Length: 342
Ligand code: KG4
Ligand code: ZN
Image (cartoon, rainbow, N blue to C red; front, side, top):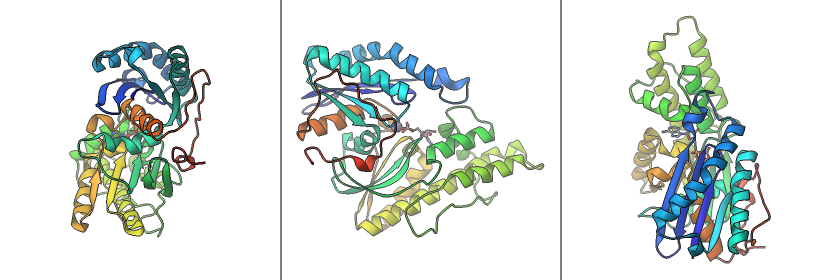
């Protein structure tokens, strides 16, 4: 079975072709960073229009990479949510219309399920069950995963997501969009420990997170009369250290509580080198193991959507025949069911 995957939930247009026997055959992403940079964040209407502009060419490119044509596609999977409503509508309409014209099944896919399963696309994939730490721009969640669609929420952020905190803090420090990777880069040149930022909810006894207070603590530092912008590197390092310490402590606690030994880290913040380093060394000491997606599949892409769709279709999930545009801008991951489950 060969699945075309389409991702348009935010500011990346992603298209990929995944073959159940042969693996990932083609995959291309267009990032809208340049488009939104002038505004300091994603402008939803511009995002939707750009998805419309890019999608047809990206589909042609992914098919060319895969060495096949539309007639070789057996099914289409698209991101139906969560995400920006207008942006989701572009991918959903395109996928449903294309599916109807080709006469192939069309499956709406949960964006976070795509992220969560993306490490299974790597050369050395994890086996079920595992704990997943989902750290994206919109979500910070710990999930117990026993199979495709079998997700139990262990804890989540009560306010800002980790990526959102990175982005907002980057803005406070005077960095551009997208802030997360820039802040991480700046932090590598700084020394943590000077600003004594808080570790929110580190000792809360549960697996929930809170990052908005951390952002406020940074605001207080940069608003003080003695703030010197030359110290931005040290502040970035302190902020990164605080986020990483809390994420790491709670992920370890989740492994301990569930008795599992595999941790999967997915979503954009999973690309953070400091987080990876900390998680790797802390789990190694316990004989546990951390799995990540391939670097190019950490941020949004069509491959993870094609893959998640393929897993569900192979397991017998019923798909539509195109034409019914389905989007869910808000869609809790734990409400998903295993393919075939009532
Ligand atoms: O998963 P993703 O591409 O999109 C969403 O589904 O949200 O995640 C994007 C988020 C952004 O907040 C971005 O700043 C953050 O991931 N991010 C990072 C790094 N790379 C991306 N945050 C910290 N360090 C990084 N290296
Ligand atoms: Zn994402």
